[in-house]
Length: 477
Image (tube, rainbow, N blue to C red; front, top):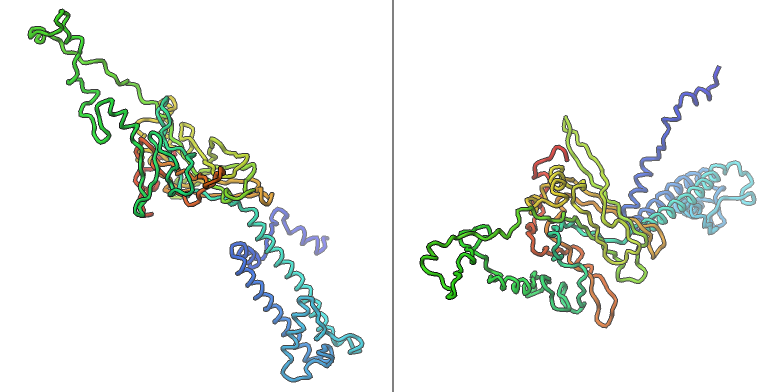
């Protein structure tokens, strides 16, 4: 027959065993990591006083039963009426903290011969001193964990939005504003310390209002060659041949070089050869971009070494009966690692035929277009409609050069956090008398409209932001 212990051991399935900590202790420890240092320290003091007072009550009760077992300033406990509770509290806190001033202590054999009657007080003081040591260790561990949590948190700021940058025509120079424009610290924010180049732009403050100014001189010169101005559009359509004539058919071969009336009547008017190609435009696929800024960029030694980005997309759809299903897919970045992250880092993902962020329909159109973005989708409405995700989660890990500890930070973007047709404003500048580049942290969330494209309207009302819910759902996304 099996013993009772054997039956108990056999009745427990080892596969069912799991760690079950105290719910209250777990909640309190998790709360200490979410709260500030001052609040946590105050909770330590309150719990300390509560434990000391509870043990003080037990010691006052035990001392009243055996007053000869507690010595207060060389006399028995309770000699002065009305001081029992305070004497018990004094013995409690000196025992809990293991300070032991000696003003109040438990009686020894020289003070009281019958030590058996003092067993209760001895057990209370022993238990309280042990709990006091444990409590001091728990408080120290919590504070050490909070400090370690600060050290493991990467001091990096993510941009509040992600930008979709339109792709340019293949073979044309880049016309978007570069993020490497250096400006002077003494100039207004966004104002370059040099003259603007062709098709560049700047933010200029006038009367407290920031205006977006474009340098259109180069564009005006180019249009001037065609007989057009920047504010005028040509009334002629390149595809309309009714207003074009063949100059060769209008020329007379005679020596006079003039046409007679008969020649005019007999002249055959033919449209010129079409100058536009019927082939679709080869538009490079747009790029989804987000920005990370090192908060210690302007501090020596604030770099993050061997930084890595992990980009995951969360897709949701509903199945019968309306049960949400979430899928997490890895998204490839053009540059997912940075050996020496010290200033600004732009994460880039190309929205091509392999991108999980693009709808199945758009991916098929891209693949059928030899990997180029379809011209009919090259507008804000179409781009937003074919972005298929509920949220993306970006995690950055690395080693801090300040603490030599591993650091990490994460950011979650939603569908309405995407702005189309914009790029991030340049953040780098130089101080007067210094060649060192610095970062203007006040411009982290500033965006500028992409040149020669149509950007979507940005509403200041959060309720008016575009959302995935307002677009038709693709069953295969």
